[in-house]
Image 1 (cartoon, rainbow, N blue to C red):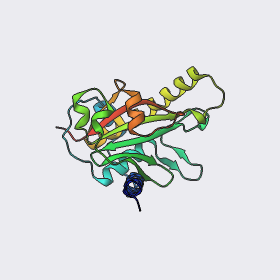
Image 2 (cartoon, rainbow, N blue to C red):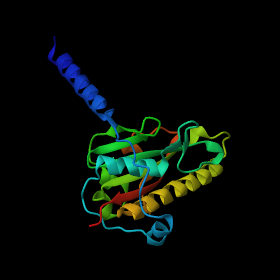
Image 3 (tube, one colour):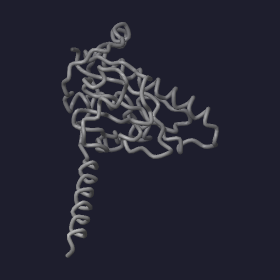
Image 4 (cartoon, rainbow, N blue to C red):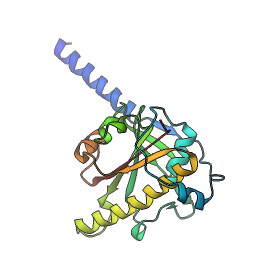
Length: 212
């Protein structure tokens, strides 16, 4: 076998291995749906914070966070903890941690890896972004909408992100975590890092983590 062909096969094997690694599935613990602070208390303590300890959230905390954000709270219908217009459920939630970038799959309550590197710094233009335990990225799948009015799609998707972002704020207030909802991001760069399709549009990001 010629040297060039051997090198080509080795390169193909390496790329295939990387692709498989990037498709790793992580099963999350069952979310804890009881407890937490009273609603009026978390509303009074809800706030934005831009200071984070560079520490990873536990699997249980990540499970609770993602379920609170946009998990399924009515299994019989598949409906979520946040509403969406006509129940289109266009928002796809990505979690970017020191262990890589993951897409949340609410039906199985699992995470599917889409990038195996620590790409937190690419999730925003502020310095603190790279230290947050997790940067949530809100992506809208425009193919879920009927019609071709892009402005209406943007408006609905932004509203859906607001609902989810507030869920995250209230969860963080209850759990003593810091968070901030962010729009100052490089959407094209994030789309590249997360390997998004043309129908998937980056809307916002939200940093979550332990206080510094």
